[in-house]
Image (cartoon, rainbow, N blue to C red; front, top):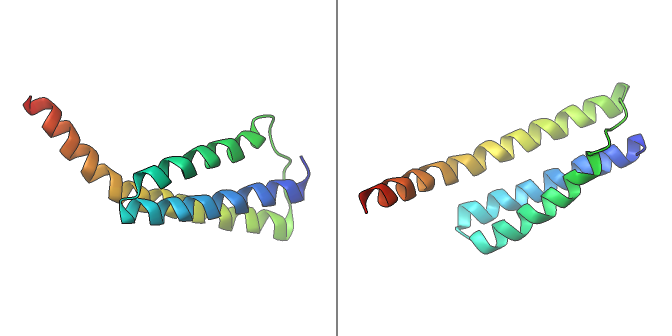
Length: 93
């Protein structure tokens, strides 16, 4: 995997998680699940490790990771209350 491949993977993941955020906010769980599979496949490219980046490429990777984390937080803000409701409903029966 080249440094350009690393950045391309992170850019793809940032885009997919942004779409997942939108799907979660819209309650589109079928779309969310499909995007989640795509993101899992894309992240699989890093299984063998990724090369270290320097300079501007390193900063771009950091910015993309921050975007991924923000998307993850926004998704959790939508899903965690719903999961709590599901848990309470399951315990009630």
